[in-house]
Image 1 (cartoon, rainbow, N blue to C red):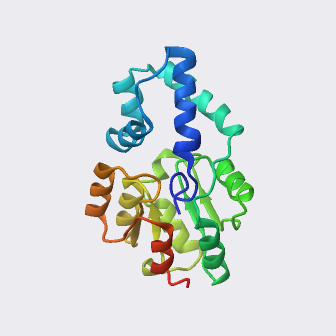
Image 2 (cartoon, rainbow, N blue to C red):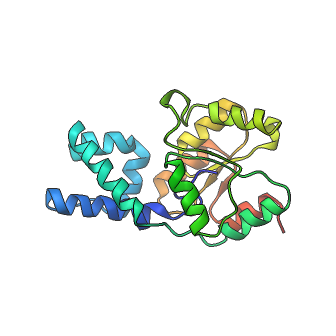
Length: 211
């Protein structure tokens, strides 16, 4: 499982509000809406969005990241409706829950505890070295090896293309999580990438045959 906007509703409730507060405090505000924030983080990506579109320098980027980290410390994103039951039922059916995310591992574990989710069996977050981080397939290969799984026994669930690229590179199935927003441009890209596009958590639940 990815974490942000797959398990927890974090962009709308944490990341975007943090961005707005940062811009209000230091740059007199921002014209970018939540939909813009979703769209531009998807394409051209978060670094290009901050550097090229907003125009932050490297030093300003570091200041923004620290502001975000301080904000995340005090703001726990809510789990999406249906995710808690899905993960518990999957775990109780013998499933293994692995989290591969661009959030930090300590925040991921904190969110799982705070939201009453089962303890993940495996977590790789932003702290993983760049040369092994998603979208590279190393984390998936480690999961396959650690839990003695075949590629067809794994399903990567992610709302963004790096998760899809990682799954393809590792040769495992991929499902797109489409329940965090309703932005046509993002949905069109993800539907082109995989036949397993789930607009609701319930649709993923049915695919996993948990009922």
